[in-house]
Image 1: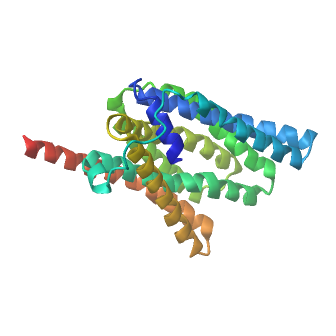
Image 2: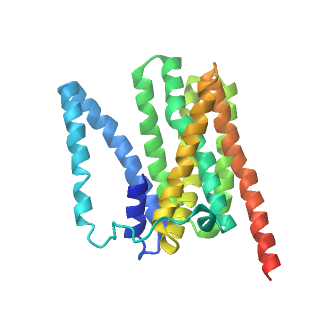
Image 3: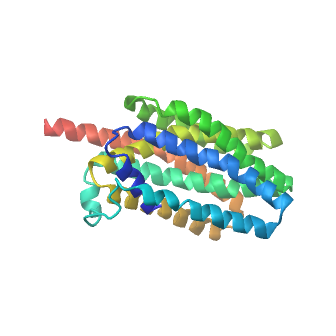
Length: 274
């Protein structure tokens, strides 16, 4: 994760279009999320599990090929990552990373715990297979338009996305409906774009102007910290689904006060500087 984000930042430095580049990267990821399950299913039905394993290894090997054509990218950082105190000296930078950490808690539950819950609730593998397809189709369409939003709309987008996802998690805890299980996946995938595109484009802008390696490293650090916190909590609980859903709801809700708190600190510092 650190390496591929670093290469992405280095390859898009001269373009100065972080938001658009981020949206197209998400579109490519989501498109792969549609193609991969379909192709895997065809190989599995027509051939065998061994053929699927070999095909996966071959495709993974092919993904290395484009790296040999990145001649314009400096793939060897010239200096070590910046110390945390230096990198997070600006209050706005710390806000973006804390926001990403809280969002990562939700994303882990959404990507792992929620499909497991659907499988146990409905008892079929096919029901889980619909999840990545729903997420990918809805996200591809919405990501394209979100990537064209102006920078001044980023903060309202994050606030709206966080509030809506928190409400959906609370509805998931109270509504017992098969239709809503899948409808909520569609809605969450849409509102997640409200958070991921502004946050990641903010990261990439700082990577272009500040230090690409530090940006990628600290982004991965906050993401991994979210993994550790979530699984440490779930491992000590008996009702893992309910607890993980509550953790997800609380984490996205905390994005709201974090955004307002740090915005107030930034304003007060600017006033004091004047």
